[in-house]
Length: 302
Image (cartoon, one colour):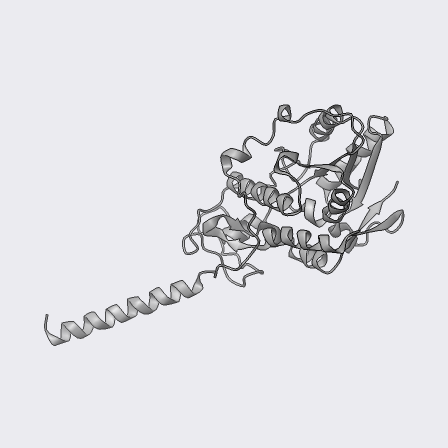
């Protein structure tokens, strides 16, 4: 190798080194976040639906929450869940949908599904995400839904709900079928006939949230549910849709706020190579910002 070739080789090597460094600098830094002891594998998630693993009870000390999508159990129900746990209630949290059709999937993937589609800027990280550069697989709807369910289990664990007292279903999000939701709710009534059942209001801004509220309200009127409570979601509150028949529910033990914030961290943590996609904050950042500033939620009364 003569001197001229050596110079070209060194120059090329330097360019490659600079490109490598620039590429690395674009990768997200691993930010510290709360990591529960149990991180849940996909095989474990598949075992969460059958009701046969639950033990029916006539106890009046049971509370069942119906969470339409992953993150609702924190945003809307975080405060009442912690209050119920503080009152030594046996709390079950039921996730109704994988939430696989959220537009947040496009933001995380950096684009829509169509080849050569326009890149989508992430408003959280102020860049276009790249599965290749950030070391994760392009998320199809099912994979995205599974990732959301994983965040749900991690968040409920962070709030103090035992893993054994959670379950999830696969109701298609976007327009919950009434009969399917009613069938699920009835199965839990059959198992815990004297429980208190909690959901969002039938007047909720989100159509799926409202459907769950309508089903619960209808079963109350038919006297199949004895005790119930409806809560106003942050999205509905921010739009000031419900102007009356509401009361503020405050967190009874302020030290419980740390558990809610741990759950918020789960939905905010971005470390995709390890399965943390921060799907909650990519979906509804403003609602999480709202939650972090408060220790209360509104309860609705018909």
